[in-house]
Image 1: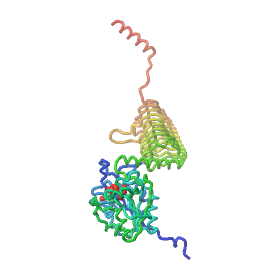
Image 2 (image 1 turned 90 degrees about the horizontal axis):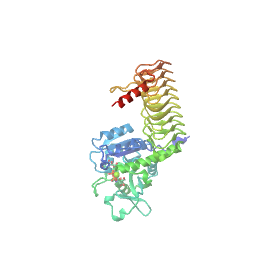
Image 3 (image 1 turned 60 degrees about the vertical axis):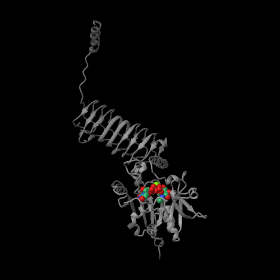
Length: 459
Ligand code: UD1
Ligand code: MG
């Protein structure tokens, strides 16, 4: 008897080729264009992430010559990816052919993506691939930009079937009037792609090998060319920093929406900035003007008050921070921790229910449960050469304006008097006072005033 699984067709194997060999001159930057970030992650890494989520079985990234930085980012984002160098920049079809060996392996689907087009959703790649499994030779992603200047135009017949893609610089006036444009991304039948690409020539206005000409090659063999239309904001290509800001705005819009639909309250969503990987639990409240750098997780019921900046921080449940809190990488806050205004926390574990409420720096430290850190306390963790740790026990109380000179340990339940400069360990339940003893001289001020007034009168 044939089971359900046996009857199902074998899954189609997919090769994704990401083009990242462009120069990106219009960014006017020392950094290669595809390494510029949106929502705290490079455009290249965004694209590689979408590719992975779209279920690609193999990934090839095409980089420019000498671009070790781009190659390193590709390796970090997709360790299995093959990195290929396009020695000369002769056009998009030429760039795809840098992955000739991978193409020759005969994958079922080949996806071609641009590393400077970071907002395309994995579902859209899946739509393109569906067209191939339905029998198309090529599936092109199209869109209707507000201004089609510079884009390749989609030329269709009366039935809407795609005939060719005409680059702006090669188009006739009638062709320039076409509003539907090539987004640049496409899916090709992996068994035939190499043959089509290898036959593309460069007799055009730019003397470049154009990937979109694969449509003409495919049609010449009678293969169907399908069109998938995408919303313009999904296929925005970033060429300069103004477009980078547009891409950032779009990705922030998506992240805010996802946060709210996931059960977080954003009082003024347009003022909250997320990273691609921010994780918010349910019933988290984020007040206006908060910035999340990469690597932040916030547990259920926590409140982030206004003007706080978080990066690489983990907040357990029912934590409250800010207003004006700064959590740096390695800040690890247990349940019900309270971090107040103008407090900076770095590489520190703060125990359950502990309070660090005002004007404090805690770095390279651990603080026990329920400890209370007074206003203006500083862990002096650095001597200009090395960093040292401070350990504060459970239920300890550190008086205001104390400096804890690390390495130093304050035992469970110990007290430190205000204004102390603590250089030696304090045992559990002890009181440490490390400051000048107070002297009070009765009547001194009155006598001083009398003497000075007399001196002044005699002049
Ligand atoms: C391309 C399309 C155009 C489409 C537009 C959408 C071609 C010929 N044209 O034009 O139809 O409307 O995108 O934005 O494909 N690259 C390389 N090596 C090269 C050339 C390009 O790696 O030799 C990479 C670039 O880094 C970039 C991508 O390919 O990521 C697209 O190149 P670009 O020069 O920006 O093409 P467009 O002129 O924008
Ligand atoms: Mg472009």
